[in-house]
Image (cartoon, rainbow, N blue to C red; front, side, top):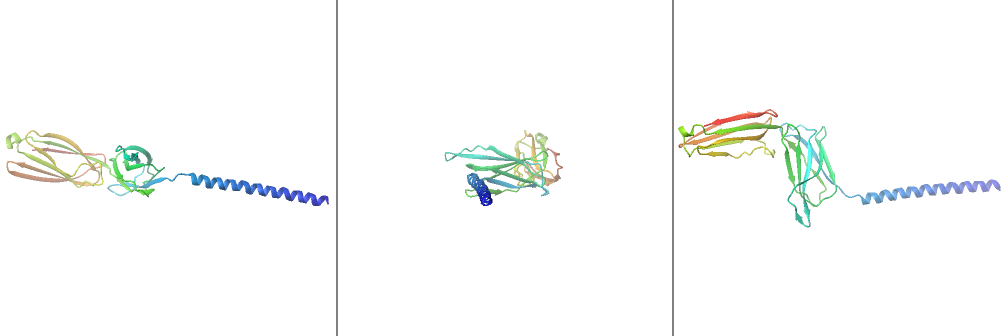
Length: 235
């Protein structure tokens, strides 16, 4: 009789232990589900940054996310820095953030030896993930010195000089325009610097109209990264 009571007591204790383990497991599962359901959805902007000339991946590029906010149904119109990251050795980047009422996003790339590059885009109402692959241009420069040195002897106030740079990658947001730069009259003495993509071939075209005659010349250049091409034109 005594033996049976001991066995019954041990069985009861064992059952209570199993019940306790089951109860604790149930609490953990319930808490996990609750925490997961309370977690806010995140926006995700990701992609790859490559060299604009070679297409090769570029690491250690700073990727800054700027945005404009929508407040009380109106756009602020002013970009503010919101998040930042750096590309890995394979050029990959990833930005995750909680939903925000944004009117426009702006991704801005920067790295020593490269020109900054900017990509703007509008957020989509239903999208929470955006894949944005971007290119960053190696920094090169061309410095122009334009001077009407002989106009007083050979020309007059109707002299017109024009210069234009072709071959600049249109994806380079900080590079100089491919439009004409025009200079009129005798008192021309201008100096300015244009950003260009190092490693790419560009063509400088120049036109001079003087006393009813016109002259055209062009020349091709390739700039090394970090270098400056000096272009002097005395006419």
